[in-house]
Length: 142
Image 1: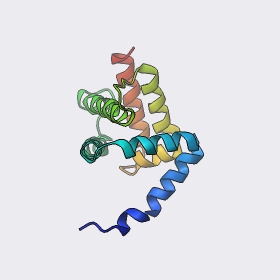
Image 2: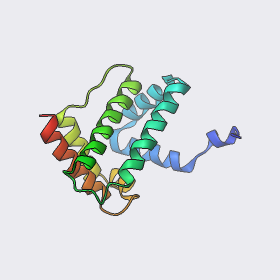
Image 3: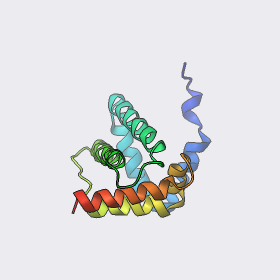
Image 4: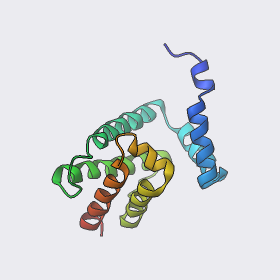
């Protein structure tokens, strides 16, 4: 059973929000928070389910070759999830293009917070997944 207090204070969420504010600025974070607030509970839960499913696959991908069919299928699913999430958040159709996907790969490999999120599945997962994204982008988005 969920209690009201569970939604009032969450130190981890507060930390993530503060990091985001430092990284991209208050205006961007406020805009994203407003976008999230405008989503229906159904959309929010669908977003979470898709994110969890994709991250589960990413958590097992470290032993796959970056250019293997299996790994590239995971990257493709990550791209579809990203398009879905951004579209839901912004309330319009968003398609991640080559440059934006390359930028995402660079962020995953180099941004400390992004890297930590991926490397929680094993040291090196962030760099490995970023390499796989670059391979996918070169082959499919150029």
